[in-house]
Image (cartoon, rainbow, N blue to C red):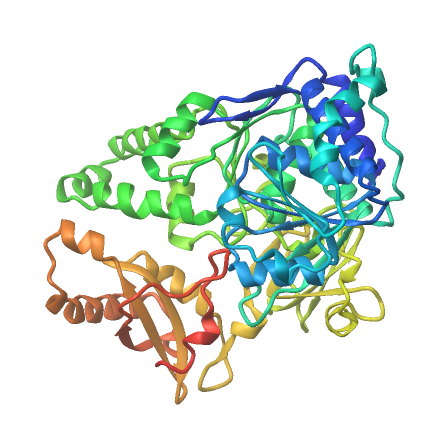
Length: 554
């Protein structure tokens, strides 16, 4: 795969797309062209220089998705410093721990997060800045940051007396082998680790993305995913800015009502989602319609069923704005039942596979090449190995090697050695198989796999996907006790209220769900009992259930 210098992607795009719209906040309507973004980046560069920020200094960013988040990130990266994006959903204690662990010297954050931060616990932080207007919220002992900011506009005019123009955009190349970002993942079994991403890692991802159908000059993008997560960062920001797209930040929680209105207004050309969004639409809107008696009869009539499926497909495409080629799903596997229905109505979607440790892409396929049920095709710059006697049929752990693989975990050589072996293979922790065209099929996490009574491999995620689509199930976990499989279910209380279902009826409903579920499972996968869990399961900021908290509750 050809590689450009990571920083030069942004320099070239700012120049080539100078007059085009780049960043817009959907709610406030604040909007910036590529030239205006480049000017804001230059002002931050001047600030960093005045403060004596050096190459490779760490700068933390934590807050809501908006134009300031993006401008700050690009300013850090093109200055030669190291960005430390932090998920805003982390607890304030964890945010402070990450800031200290990463050795960050500056912090940019949203005002609502600032309320819960104790600067006295951040000894290395020289200054803290608001991500609403770049004002200085805090300066360390002996610092003169607030004074520097007051004179910044004047110094900027002195540096660029004739105004800031595209010819002024010039960034020093940082070797692609060097560190450009530390990303703290939200693992489900303990405190997260700092993934060290190099320019080569990002460059390989961007290069691949620019050859896809998902990043093109002039595209409209609706940014909804957390930018501090590698999936949202690459798909909605890095690839799109490199291509010359126009990014609209949703700025709000994507409730169905808000999401539909925003999709209609923006009409995005590329859409990046987690599967849960599509699964909820299928379960809460489509399933109730097609399960009506009259609809079931109609769907059994040849010709009429084709027309009905076509109408459902059109309505669903229109819901997402109608301008995209294929919905991109990542971050988790798509529920098999939802996927089967989407295939039946010929809805355009593709699933990818990645991890923060690969910045993040491992596999992806264009719509015309996508194999249903797969997680996409291995990227050309990567190699894959399956630890299995028959990698085409028997699942084994997936090992990855190539340009996307991280440098290691920051200040954690033990964890690095446990993840990347001496030959350079990254042990993903995911179980899967491949086909002869390098399509990857994920079966589950190694640590979640259970053993059946005769040593059969059981993947609880596959069972949970089926159970989650059953009546009045909001979310669930499958665990094992005394060699028997038991499901913990958090009921869908909102759906129960709508259907006038009383709590006393839950046991009967869940028992029927168990019976129906087992009809679709192998005998060794059968669920012996469903236990009602009365509160939502605790989750990581990535919304993954912390399974380890519930393994002993069965």
